[in-house]
Structures are given as C-alpha cells and as structure tokens.
Length: 311
Image (tube, rainbow, N blue to C red; front, side, top):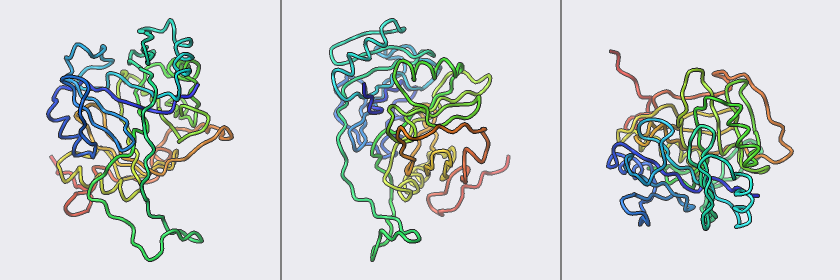
C-alpha cells in the first residue's frame, strides 16, 4: 500500500472573498472548478486547494469552530491501494467505499479521503548553492523571487488532544512511519518508509483543543521562501514567524497567518529519509524548534525586520 502524499485540501471559511485573495497572493493558480460554488486553486504539481463557504452542507462536520480544514485528501499510487485501505479502515467512523475513493474520519473527527493521485512531475531549474568544496553555480547569480509559486502541498500539522491514539491510527491503519519525536509533545510522521521528513506532524499542547495548526507548501529554494514571504508582507498579510530554520527537519521556513485557518507555510530543504533512518527522541525546546527565526517577518519595502508598535 502506497500513500504518496497530500493530494487535496478542502476548507470551509467564514470569508470566501478574503480566502480567494489570500490564495492568489500566496502564489496558487486559480483553476476551473468542477465543484459548483467552490473555488479551486492548484500548485505546480497539480495538488489542489478547494474553498467552500463554511456553511456549505456538502462539507463534513468541522472538527473545530471557525474557518478550518474540513477534508484532507491523500493520494495513492494505484487502485489496489484503495482496496487495501478499505479493508484496513472498514469499521472506522464515517467509513465509505466509493468508486475511486475511500473515506473515513480520524480519531479526532477530521474527514480523510483517499484517491488515486493525479499529481504531475514538475521540471524546473533550481540554480545550485556554492559551498566549500562543492561549487554548483558558476558565472551566475542566485535568483531573487518577486513572489512564490508553490510546487506542492508538503505537510499538514494538527493540534491533537490524544497524541497516543492519533499516532496509533496513522501508523497502524495507514502505515505512516515516525521520523522524529518531541517527548510527550508531538510526533513527525511520513507516509512511507522513504520520503521527505514529514507529511504529518501531530502536536499535543495541554488544554489545547483539536484543530489545524498549519499547512505547508514546498518551494524551490531558500530564496523563494524569502521572496514569497516578502511578497505576502507587502500585500499586508501578517507573518506568524519567519524566515527561519528548523533543525529537526533542516527546513527553511516562513509562516503566514491564514484566513482559511491556522497558518500557511513556505518551506524548502527538508531532510529526505529512508528505512535506514532511526527516529530521534528530543525534548521540545526553543533550540530544537528553531535554529534561528525572525518574529513578525521582514517588511516587504525595507527588507528589514517588522517592528511591532508598543501599546
């Protein structure tokens, strides 16, 4: 059974027009929606983001109040993967087997859907980085990006109330592998034995209810992380944190507060793991979360740190 990664995100939002502006500014391409009264946006590899009004009766029940993710669609490699999933998930809350799809709810009520992946390979040139003893770029400057164009949906992060139950569901029912852990705080998981550091992060904070923390989109390189974040700040979308770097996954990041719920992240340079990788068990701390980070982002005009006004 092969789950390839995140295929589609379906959001129910309070302000559809604001969500449209955000997604366009974020760099996602608006597409012709096959769903009436729902807006479609795509990444370069064809993964999808749908926006519905939060009261749309076609959406499943929300697992938290307000604008949030209502359905998470995972892509699989072949039809036999759907058969295997149907066998594993039969009996789960919300289980349904349709032509070309399997649906259920996870232990905290989020609707999951599994479909054949329609993502495409993306061939884009990424200029190399020059490091000591490893010169990849000659007679050529590094790029400067005016905005980002996300390549794909990389991962999703949830606040969870019962970390043990959630990890058991994703590992035992869906075959996810732990990549690293924060003791008593969270687990990073990837969909298969081999892949990028995580497709899913389950985060437990005492007295914090279940909900969406953020969704993350891959971009070409650190320069596009910076260009994307600067563009969002120029368009008056606020930064949660970034730019910065996570030592636990090696990724460079920039998180922007989202009207769709949680935050949206640009990221690149995350670790790629195989079955040989041994998950680390770490104490959650400022140092293990960020090697360095800028709070509030960089001003798109001055290119300097945004300074919060007192009062």
